[in-house]
Amino acid sequence: MNITQVAAIVVAAHVLGAPTERRETGGVTVRVLSLRGQRFGQVCDFTLDDGHRRWRLETVTDNHGIDTVGRTLGKRLSVRLDALHAQATEHFTQRPTAE
Image (cartoon, rainbow, N blue to C red; front, side, top):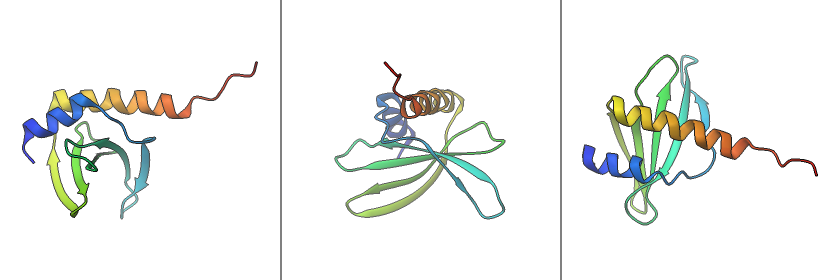
């Protein structure tokens, strides 16, 4: 997957569910944000390690299986993913107000 395709996925910003966190070996916490890819059924998982500023496209999953990519994104795309992560976190953690 080239950087133009990755940028198109980030700009389209079809977030699939609430952002998650996972613990890697060594105790490092990694934020995970899943976006819909360009093809039907394609899911792109982006990760951000604690203490890092740039997101990585970690895996692309489709009906053919999982492809490990491991591409670090530039500043602009990382800033966009930071904003998407914040929006998705806020959206999925909102509690209904009591009436």
